[in-house]
Length: 475
Image 1 (cartoon, helix red, strand yellow):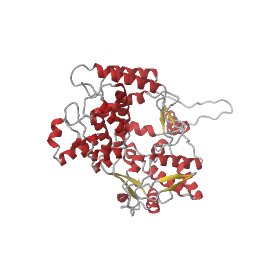
Image 2 (cartoon, one colour):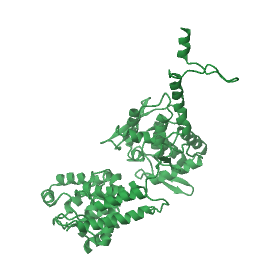
Image 3 (tube, one colour):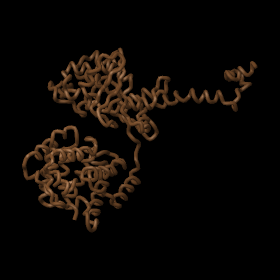
Image 4 (tube, rainbow, N blue to C red):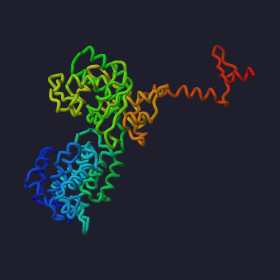
């Protein structure tokens, strides 16, 4: 039989669910019963690998999540023989622990683990096998997994767990099973789950609830930044000035929030004397195998990203901090900084601060729609900086518009992500028509098959001949 929930495992699951990642790590470091997890399939203790996953390197990986998954499921991904071979080899244990915790970005593992926990909770409650058995019939597992898929189908069709008025998109529903397979393949090192009934339910959901228009972040445009800087000068509130400085850094570097969260403060401070370029260093960035940077132009005005970076470092004492952005807490209708160089600002807090700043500045989105099949959100998001930078650099079609290659290099996109980059480009209908009208007129003006009207109605203006036609007439 495959792994099935017993009363002991149910108790362990309830206990584990009450622990945060940090508490899970602490739990695994102690010589407790919960650490002596025995795998039913092979009789091999998980203690060595779980202990190694609790080592300090887990701060930069998803090791805490992985350790919780292994302890809860009682599955040893590296097998009994290998575990026995390396149990006294600390270097080999560390290598395999790192391997398990580097099977996906921490954000990816965190995202997909939500779906895995849904399935484990459901299987525990219904006493269903968590995975197929290695021998014999798969019917018991497939029946339980299909039941789970049907329940998720109904929840998604009614707007999901957030209580939305509209059904979840087909991709939101299918992402549940993609996430479960990510855990099964990448962390548990088991074959992917392919159940025909579940695949049929995914197709059925897509047919019943066709995909709606994709929502895009409203672009933060240069005029918005101009307004924010102006309001910050007159308002003279610390938190508002801080928001504007972060906005300038994110816009000028076309950064994601994860990029800003991973800024290398000390490396970024090393090239402050170059009059033309500032290297904004990041410990890691999507599509980059290791440390990287963005070459940010130095501007001799109030929109300079390097000056904004230096102001934050000096004003909040972040020169030696691991993270650039200090923690803020809300106090009444404003925010105050927490004077602790070791604490950092969270995504949710800054998003609230940014939206409040945009409201105070009375700034609203000016682009109401992007490409066909997309709609622009009504609320501001962190991706608005990337969208705004892309639209400014590409959207208006001016002479100084930069190439896709330059944009990909600057914003840390993969060179294979042309469609993604173009999707960030947001222009209004007026901007689009303004861009293509001259090209259309030039095409007609130079067409040999179209001749200008020789006689016009009384009072009308004769059609002007092209330069080429006038020169031919002189000859």
